[in-house]
Length: 329
Image (cartoon, rainbow, N blue to C red; front, side):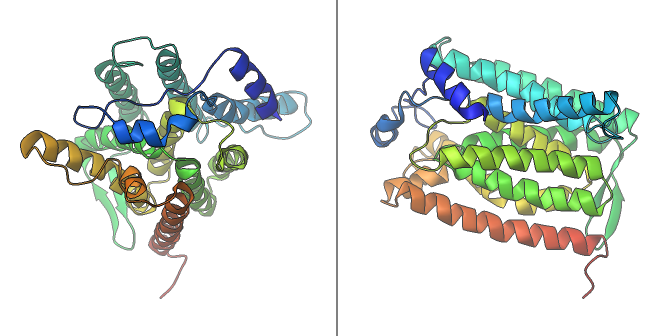
């Protein structure tokens, strides 16, 4: 329902996508510009109506609860406050970055890398402090093995998880439907885990994310009507990390998010190789663009990455349920 309204005003305000011109590790991204030139001007910042719709539904449920039409709203302190706050905070950060990029503000066409990373780190540090000191969480769960107490090491681990998931989804968001489909699969896996653990409000929150992602994909399948932008990828990526920590499912996150991890590693490997050895490992990074340059069509890459995401998603879910003793060998 929000999409037609968004598209109307996005076009009116000229919130069109700008094509990246710099390659990983420096230099001109000539191939990328050529392959994606047709996408220039397509409305972006669609993530605003994605996380915005989640927020609106939660507010609506609170109003229904206030007037006594339902027993409980979705705004539950123990299960929804943290992921909702993450979704909105990271959505606003990504939104500013998108707007700067569209208006060509800043030397790097958007918020510069250091300030953006600093904000991410500060946010992750605040979350780590809350989990460790307020919720008194200091252990990680290894499925089928048990809990491991790591003490203060939980804080840097939490920071690493949130920053990594936010950036990994952001890096993967490069082809029509790619990141959206993988996020939908990941959120489905964690929705099931939250439900099984009895975190019903959190499971419903995952359902809201799934619904918004499904609506986005309906309009993002090639040729995309709009893109989620950083306001979507950073928000949903960081929130996925928070949900994984809330369900004590770090190992599951690593498995479910394997495609995101591989995509991120391809960028790091390319950057390191170009800086140290002056050679490229991949034709172009991230990995999905490597296959694009090899001649794979955009739809083929997206569908094959979705298949891998589904395989890892099911595998992660099974391991998670095994760890809770719900699947018996």
